[in-house]
Length: 197
Image (cartoon, rainbow, N blue to C red; front, top):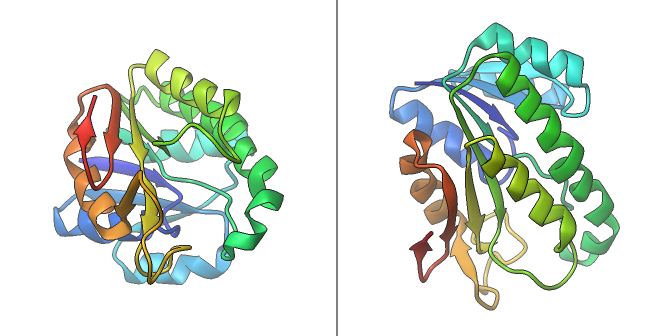
């Protein structure tokens, strides 16, 4: 399968690169950071330097690669949980404008599959209308939404102590994402407790 992965150097994206490669998929791994290109190339994937908010360049990149599926794992979150509130507007832009641009690119490339991450909770910072609109847009396009619990494990906000539910170990979240590359469409919850529609 040919996979265009947006957010390839992020927390879950970097894990998906390894899993997808191990399964023999051909991957275009998108990042907005030029310093991460060499690492992606060394991982055996095709690096794509592109800004999620540059719709014209994004459409060109996706059309050029001709993927079977676009996987949206892009976020804009801080390394420190104490800074999360400051990043909410930026992450909301990823979920709104970024999602619109990726969906437009997938349509322009006549890509049959689209998978996007979301969240399994509906209270607190960064929830509400933007998340709902993000999910609705993906579903309207015939795509798949994965509602992950709060990540814990290496590199997360909760490296040593798991957060309150809903939660999922980040390595398990990546592993459990893989079967959804082939569908089905719909909204699915991926937590320590469930994979439910």
